[in-house]
Image 1 (cartoon, rainbow, N blue to C red):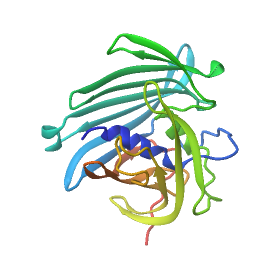
Image 2: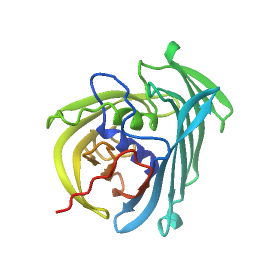
Image 3: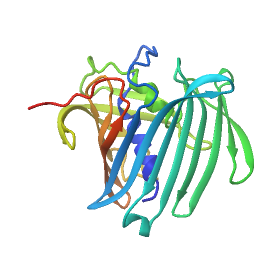
Image 4: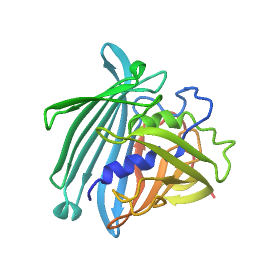
Amino acid sequence: MKKTILALIVFWLSAFTNQNGEMESSAYQAGEWFQFRIHYGIFNASYATLHLKNDYLGGKEVYHVVGHGRTTGLASLFFKVEDNYESYFDKETGRPYKFIRQIDEGGHTKDLEIDFYHNKNKAVVNDHKHGTKKTFSTPDDIQDLLSAFYYLRDHYDTNNIRVGEEVVMDLLFDDDETFKFKLKFLGRQTLNTKFGKVKCLKFRPYVQSGRIFEEEESLTLWVSDDENKIPMRIKAEILVGSIKADLNAFKGLKHQFKIQMN
């Protein structure tokens, strides 16, 4: 399914920012790993994983997260997807230093490496597929698609969040485009999952219509209402139907995963 993993990463950004700008690194730790099962109608279309680990970049200790997605089963016979996303980001500030996007979606391929220079408000894009390099300006506090997920998990005061509250932030979308990402808090809900009943925060992300999604309000996201802030379920209406992604497996959480007993 075309752009499935990119869509899923965008969904993950939808639940987490705080007005105070402080970085506490309290929601996650190195070794954290998630697997999501993505359904397209009645078919199990693909799996996506996120793995966070310690690493070094330019002699500096950083977090290194790898996101991988692929189609499986019958879906792979009709449309093969093999996507790899990586981000290296600062352990203290959460700012990204390097973002890698390597995708093969039904023969549509990209091989990009983006280096961020926050002191100069610029990013350098290396397009390995076409052998080109270019520089473009970035706004303050720019995030890439993966680093934003971890940055925002530590910046949302969910104890004081109000229904209808909206949050906006700048994200790097592709090799030369940033966009404003906005979401609205819809309320709290308990979901029945494969792990049991889980208390969740429900959000409505607003995304750019016409490229992947049918409308601006095509997405709904449920995130665990605990210290981990794990995406539990994502539903989306896309141009050729609808998809749903559920948390399928996890390990290495920093905090206890809370399951409602009744």
